Length: 108
Ligand code: FES
Image 1 (cartoon, rainbow, N blue to C red):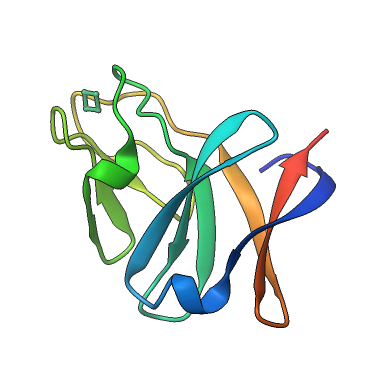
Image 2: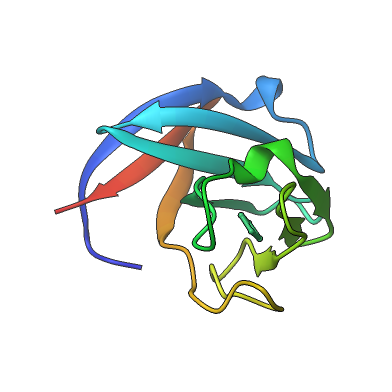
């Protein structure tokens, strides 16, 4: 995760219940925001590194997101590519709550 330059409000926390995700656009980037069942919040690039697919069109299982196109999987906590055909990690972003709002940390 790179250093945060700007925090931007991207959603109301109530709009992303535990076990859910949300596609957002911020700073010209397509980003997927996740609220895991353990209560933690995470964000990664929403574009698969294999071909053009939005990861939020796929399936979230625990901390893993499965791409809808060829079933590649990423760990949403680290952005790590977990299985073929993906072999390149996705970028991660900082996420924090400010009261009832979800803030995304955009890098420099
Ligand atoms: S586009 Fe995501 S696995 Fe191929």
